[in-house]
Image 1 (spheres, rainbow, N blue to C red):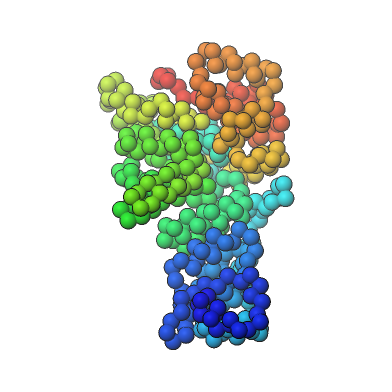
Image 2: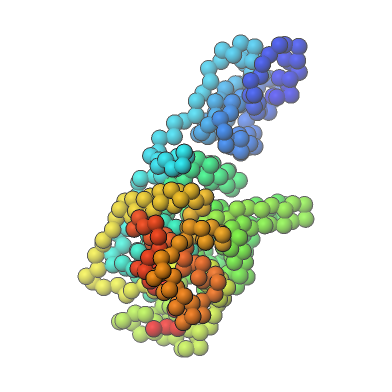
Length: 422
């Protein structure tokens, strides 16, 4: 349609006013929708724009914020519009979600909680770790017997995550469009949970004809949950180290090389042993020491070193009760988010770079002394020290503290992974 308009209006004195024109033109003059119109308009929506699209595309394109739309059914209608500018424009569907404002930018969130933490009985330590993980986007590993609530916590994390800027919402919508799905344009972050039998290509992306995004790329700005972590293929677990560390994944093919961003919250769950009863007070573990050791050794130290929070789940008890609701936890996350944005952080605490850790993770003298003692006692690596500082920074933000204090460091140290079973 753009080419036809250029030919039809070449002798006219018309100001096109920076309109973007999309549409496939049929021989009968009807303007048709194509599969690429939606992602193309989506990629332009970082700032307010004006577009002319086929009437067939209106229902999809109208969901994209920041655009002024003129929908036409035929080429003659498009010509008439540019000559007269009298055809009504269609405004985007209003974005009516609540938001927080920080540093001159709006961050939207969804206040609905279809899955609520009030349904998780007991597991106070695990729920506290989940709150810290959500507030700072820290990777989380939960270990416990079957049925103790690992998957319940992981599924509810999605609804208490920090708010999203419009740019982040558009990024997530673009990934959904690449996956062949219709984006919802909501500030509810994505949740991907591949099965442990999934292939490496399905998780990291690939394909013989083109580099399609996998589960890791689709989890961008959201949660990637691996249940039964040790049962994933060794090649998958080792390949996971790059997106966890560098927050990107590169897919190379003969005719194409595509890089996807992978800034996500990694959540994993595992049993303490192959039969799952090692930590159970009532059931007897049927595993030998060799089987348990082989099971644990499926997870390498470099991979585990990239996980900030480790929680050993408590056995279920009859008198367990609920404490926090998702709404209460989300409110705490939002306050911690404002603390982070108040320091003009571009990233959440769990994704801070090295120089940013030194700038934002400031410890008082007592906390610094405790951290140095822990480094000497436990032979902590440089990455482990950085992870502890980032977790302590989030705990301090949840308590609205500018400086990291003793209790924040002690709690962060309590989430370290134990190297031996208790």
